[in-house]
Length: 375
Image 1: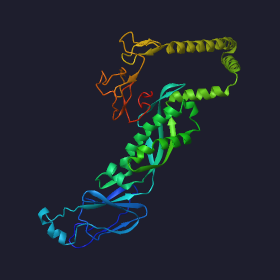
Image 2 (image 1 turned 45 degrees about the vertical axis):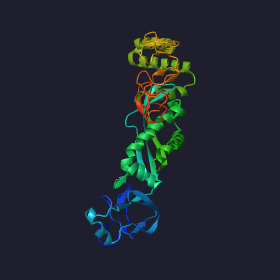
Image 3 (image 1 turned 90 degrees about the vertical axis):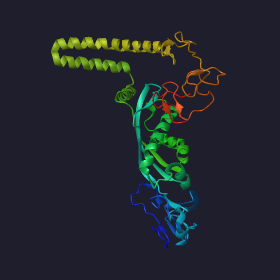
Image 4 (image 1 turned 180 degrees about the vertical axis):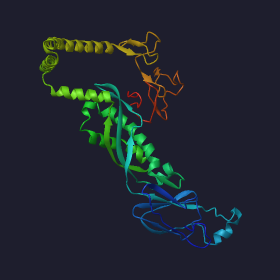
């Protein structure tokens, strides 16, 4: 590059041979003595940003540009003798790659919690791909890349996919009631999630050029429940279905054990309707009993659902407002939380779930750990 020679002027240009670099700095090792008259060549898919005396002084679009600094060939070396023959007028040029970086992977490293309206609390795994590009080069350098000599898509991919997963959890909690409504809605969910992520990307000078959901997978037992639900939706008359199953059981028993098997099959066929009725009544009673009790968020003892105060610890169940840091119920005029001492009106730097106290991204509406609504 000739950034530290005595006489020759620099000719600065850069080619991305790997296809993965978002940013590249010249000189590659620290700053240099870029001289007055140095030539800078910027390609159509690039932007150039010159830092002089520690500040971003100019941005350059495609074309050839003449750089102007206080470093004069040969003369600058003589005048910089007090600084060890190194000019204090340091300069560097950052080349920013403006192309679209495609096929970046995102996915849940650990399953995220989702509270399904019909299945209850379940844990989901989701995967997909997304595309990014730099739209504000100076903002990208100042907020994300800093003084690094190069910055690749792999370095930013890990953080961005965690942001996507967190916002996906919020979006599913707001827009999706149950997984039974999920098939056929992947495109709509991806588009809505992309809009939700605009602010998270623009604060770094990035644009989310595209986001795609390839799969949202519940646990195997939940998949079995979904399959059972699909089978039941095909069956129009449950009574006829039970009778058919009983007849099939009788036929199979008769074929295997003769007359004794026929009697056994007949007995099973007569018992099956009663068994189904008993199971249904037991399930209904269990649901009614479960809905009549709740759990105290303070001492975690089981208390009546209509209780205003916990009979074990006295914790108030009628919530006026909660501590934004730990979730403790606060009195209307409280200035500080009696549990953690956090100011009552101050917003935390992270969002803490009031139910399980897990840390979430700022502004999260649903917890990644327990799936409950925050706040």
